[in-house]
Length: 128
Image (cartoon, rainbow, N blue to C red; front, top):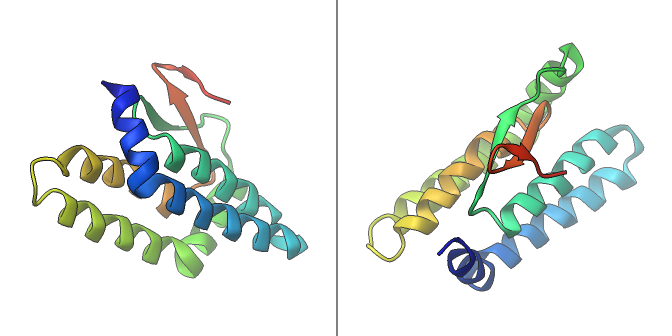
């Protein structure tokens, strides 16, 4: 079931969502000082491409730099990304068929709001 949901997600929304995160990551990597945000955007792109069966957890070794980076990220981009996932998820949950895709959008909110200091895991083990 997870594979079917991932394929439907990929076709309906995941490809375009991941592509937008990749483009944002490229822009962040071109601007040298924002490379950590670019790497985080690439990580979010992978999660947005194939979200079912994976989740995010806080990294235990994340320090003060991740906290400062997340504050900057929230101010610059995180709040509108999270708001977009929230609105899209709520709209998708209006239909029975869209509920799993709405939940997938809700799963993307924490990582889009504060991507630094988070790790993507598959069934309790590290995905990357």
